[in-house]
Amino acid sequence: MTDVASQPLVTVTVTDHVATVSLNNAAKRNALSAALLDAFIDALSGLKGQDVRAVILRAAPGLPVWSAGHDIKELPHGHEDPLGYADPLERALRAIREFPYPVIAMIHGTVWGGAFDLVLSCDMIVADETASFAITPVNLGLPYNTTGLLHFIGRLPMNLIKEMFFTATPLKADDAAKWHIVNHLVPSAELDSFTQALAEGMTHKAPLAVAVIKEQLRVLADYQPIAAQVFERIQDMRRVVYESADFQEGINAFLEKRKAVFTGK
Ligand code: LCV
Image (cartoon, rainbow, N blue to C red; front, top):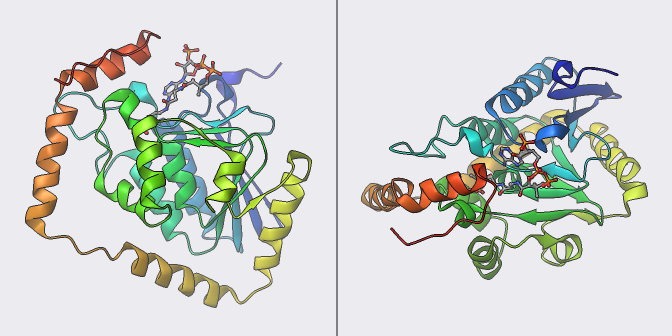
């Protein structure tokens, strides 16, 4: 029996210009810890030197949880922005968005919190019937960051964004297909082969054109002018939230495996 602790947090295989990157920490439900995210970022960076023209990002086979989102135990809580620019999750999101070839999120199982932001940062999403997607800052009392909200605004209708953020209720696979969050919803028995075929098809296209069009779309979509004083006002509002007793309560409730009781303070 292989010692779980010795297994890599992220595994990579490359076949015919397609790299498959698997999140591999079942015991912690692929919680996005700094260690796992650094391994992911390194894996992606290492692929740039190879003749890889498409990436499939998946959880290790058979896991009922694709990813439980940001490692809550590593969230800064106190007087620090919990989702700052240098946060490992934010670095991973940028690594995906800046990777020169298509990254396809292949989803079997449930996706939580910042892992949903990670999946939305991929270029395409293929899911099976076991998939669900939840964004959960209100369960922790955490003020999501502005970059992250812009990711959602660029991909989902505002009424859906508000329902998902304010209820933290997982969106089931067929509703994710209805809202066009996923490119394809396929039976789990076909998920691997369908996603592999989608990836392989793109590897026969002109790679320079694919890479530059991906970068053009990124810079155009990310161009969201915001006045400095508006940004500063938002940061002040977020600071009140991440310095609140409620945020501490959200973290403590998770760590103590109990339901949080929020007071609005
Ligand atoms: C650290 C974990 C986690 C975890 N961190 O298994 O979106 S935002 O703004 O909130 C953003 C900041 C964010 O992404 O926050 C995280 C949002 N994620 C969640 O709220 C999901 C939290 N996890 C769960 O609800 C459950 O773990 C699910 C439903 C994912 C799986 O439940 P299941 O019963 O299968 P356990 O809860 O027993 O978890 C197994 C181990 O993984 C740890 C958890 O603490 C436990 O560790 P121990 O065995 O040491 O007790 N774990 C799970 N999620 N996000 N650690």
